[in-house]
Length: 95
Image 1 (cartoon, helix red, strand yellow):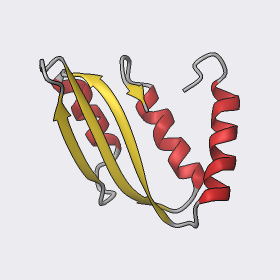
Image 2 (cartoon, one colour):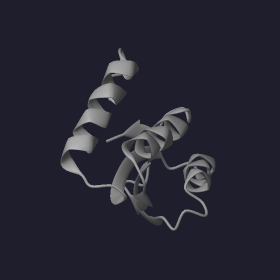
Image 3 (cartoon, helix red, strand yellow):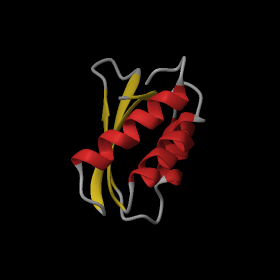
């Protein structure tokens, strides 16, 4: 994500999602986070009760965890809202 201009990043993302997907649609989020239980738990809570499929994979040395989340959403706005919620967690990298 372009941390220098998040407004422009989300505007472009919304345009791309609108052009390339039919809604509702499954969306795959990918995040990298230090392997700290509280951060992973906070991400899980954001997607709780949504029917999301969450896969965790630790890095070779165990310092980082890849979090892949597939969830059915109704619109590009919902995709962006979840990115913003997860983005509020310090140290999470969105891919």
